Length: 167
Image (cartoon, rainbow, N blue to C red; front, side, top):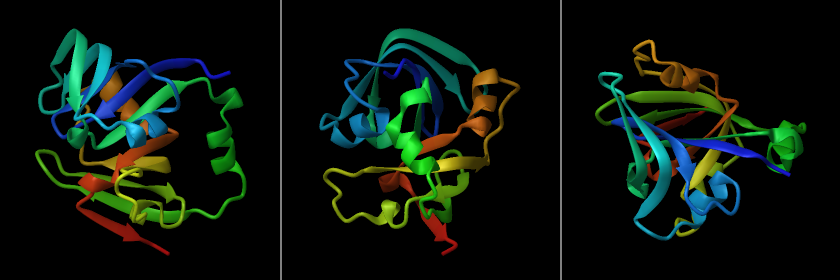
């Protein structure tokens, strides 16, 4: 059984930490299946990427189109999705670039073609394992620093500006 601790959403303005309301599955599935414009986040903390300032609110509505990256903190001991990625499956090494208020780069490994699935109505996000991020000042904030140590990231392919596939 998974123990879901907290969710993390990155936009080009804020890092948002909280709990997705009415969460019934893994975050990647929630993001792909969510058909409303806004995702509700309970007990949200917003960290301004430009200044490091924090805002807290009991309920936040996040526009799905604003999400660049997502991650859920959980006990992965029985997580079959992470176990599948850890098996000797062939993964492609890629660099992903987002442009906007903050230019970000993520380098890591993805399932072959996962970023280019043609079914836009159901697969808006893809998973990158062992992401390395460049372009963000951490303002000596523990949550912003934590972005550099994520075991995986869920990336919004509709917001990707450029992608370089080393394969």
